[in-house]
Image (cartoon, rainbow, N blue to C red; front, side):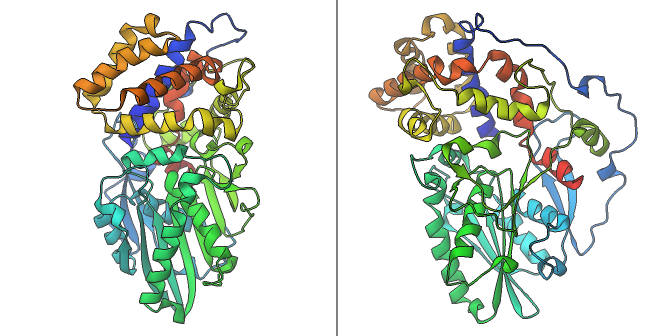
Length: 465
C-alpha cells in the first residue's frame, strides 16, 4: 500500500501543481475550517482497544492493521472473533461480528502464511492459494485463495481476494474499458471461477450443500463483489442468497447496472469520506451489486481518539460552495474531475468512453511506473518537476525532457515515443479535467482523503456501526 501512496501523492502534485498557477483567476471561494485534531488534549488513559494486556481466546485472532500515520504507535492491534453460528444464521441479515471477521481476513490476504494460520485457527482446511502469489504482481495478476470447513451437513467455502501488497496490480483499477463490466476486474473472474470449480470438484465438496463466504478489501473488494454476483448466477452451484455470505470493504464499482442486482446477502461496507468506493463513478454506468452499508460517522475524530491516541486525522480544509464537511471531499473531487471540458472533448473524462480513449493508458502507465520507482528515484522526479515548473507548464516537450533522462539514467528504458505520448496526455489532463481540481482541494485535503481508505480508520468506524 505504501507504494500506492507514493503515486497518490505524486499524481495530484503533477497534475495540480502544473495547473494551479493558471486557475487563481477562476471563481472559487475557499475558507479554512480545521478539524478538531489540532485541539484534542490527550490524557494518560489507555485507548479502549488496548486497556490491558490481552489473553488470546480460542475463538479470537490477533490482527495487526496497516496504518497510515505512525504518530503514537507503530502498528494497530485488534482482536477479531469467530463462531460457526455466523454461517448458520440468516445470511440476508447484516452481521457485524461476521463483518469484523471478514474484515480481518481481507486485511491479511497478501500473506500466505498468515492467511493459512487464520484458516487453521478457526478450523478451515484444504487452503488453496493461486499461482499469482508466487510471482511479482503486475497489472494482469490477481491474488485469491480458498479454504473449506464442514459445519453440520454443509460445506463452507471461504474465498478471499487479495487487496493489499499487490504493487503494480493496482494499475488494473483503471483498466475500465469503454463498455460492459469493469474490464480489468472482469478479466480475471473467469479464472477464479474455473479454479473454484476445480477446487470444489476435486475435493467432492459438491456432495453436500455449499455456502460461500466471500471477502475482499479495496480492489479485492470490487472483485469479490463481482464474484458473488457470478456465483449467484451460476447454475453449477445452484446457490441462492440464503447460502451467500459476502462482505466487501471500500470496494470500487465494477458491474453494469443490469448485473448490479440488490442481493440481500452481499454487503459492501463503505466509508463515504473514502474516494476509492466512488471509482469507477456511477456516471460511467458502473455499480456494486448487493447492499451498501455506510460506516462514516460525523464524530469520527472523537471515535478515533477514544480507540487509539495515535490516530489523528489530518486537518480538514472547508471550501465554500464545494463541500461543507469532510465526508463530501471525495464526492467533490469526483464531481470536479467529471466536469465536461468545453473546448475539446479529447481533453475530457466526463464519460467512460472519453476516459478509456484519452486517459486510461496513461494513468495505467503512471501506476506501473511509480510502483516500480524507489523513493530516491521518485524524489528525483519530483525535485526536477519543482525546479522546472514554469518551463514545463502546459508544455509536453519540456515535461518529456525533464522526466525521460531521469528514467533512462536509472535503468527504466521505455520507448521514447511512448513516454512522449504519455507526456502529451498528462498535459491534456492538466488543461482539461485537472484544471477544475484546485490546488487547495488536493494539497490541503489529499492526506485526509488517503487516510480515510486505511484499515485502522475503517476498522474503528465498522466497530462503532
